[in-house]
Figure 1 (cartoon, helix red, strand yellow):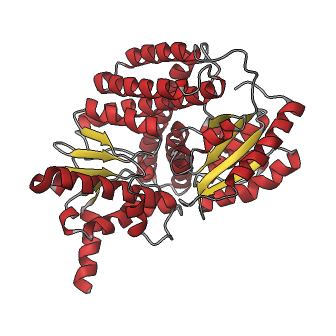
Figure 2 (figure 1 turned 135 degrees about the horizontal axis):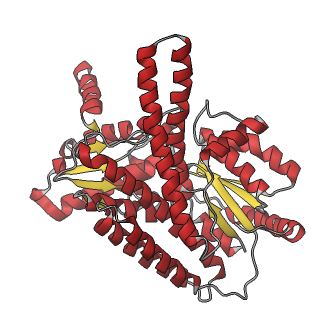
Figure 3 (figure 1 turned 90 degrees about the horizontal axis):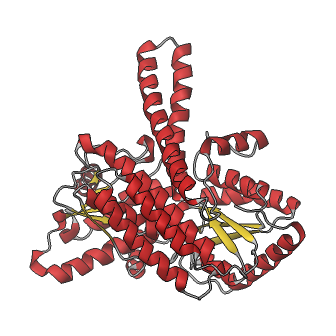
Length: 451
């Protein structure tokens, strides 16, 4: 028993982390569909054989090898990797080599269970002798998802720039989808158009990501937005505007949330979901915030050796933050004159919102920081309702609900919690219909503002 425990701990340290991706197949789980494919395009541009795994087909496997106490995304992603590797074994037969694969599963700090997914999945993979050599490639929010050891050091910074830009472009394509679909002339035309556009942008990132030819990518994005705008029927009046917040995986993975955006649209909504770039910006902002705290502390303690390190960290993460803002601003400035898309919240502004209203603190961390402040921004911007999407028992989202539900009730702004665990709740449709009735009433009484 002691030897087995020792082997497990050794595997967690040796087979989870940052490994060279050269000559490996890099398996990316699908969270946000568009973002996963554009990111895979960036990896391929830098010479990595990256592919996006099919998702949700292995849910039964995921549930078989979990207890049900885990966060729902853990079950989904565990099922995805087991299903994919099983298919690969069947396809390749005796030529299957587990050491040829690296499974991408990042992590985050704090009390959120996301930080433990890759550890648990390592134990599951090790329970299959033929899968023990599959590595789990993990990036962490503690260093803003640096790529130390996964790519050559001289190329890692260029990769991060291209990867972040791919996230921004994917967010814009998602927002274009939500902007077009409620007003499309022909049912289904927007979905088909965005699917083609996703494939095009993934190809562009594969061709131009490593070259950092972002201007060419933006030119193509502009063409896509112009083409998409023609799908809108101008005779359809504006619909109630609904904002979504919540746990990043559930609110972006359409199978896990049972396509709640489409359900809301079916009942007359136009929806805006919190972006992926917002989370990336948050992790960078948090590193800047922590560096400032440590700098003040070490100056008081006269620990000048530590001060030097803090200044270095502050300049590095601060530079990343400025670059991320720069790339976001350029992208949105290209598309906003063409169509009114919702922009992204500045994380520093969200921090100020929390402090001003004394609702929560960035010191406590988790996505509750973004969700609580994000709801306040939706409220101030004149949205007609808010939906909080999260895995069943998710602590940060439960905190969000407990803080914001009373406030929204007092302001008479419709609010709905949407928790998911893979089961189909018979009352969900009724809850959405009731929520949207309230949103229509709010829109009729108060109107709705532009994005």
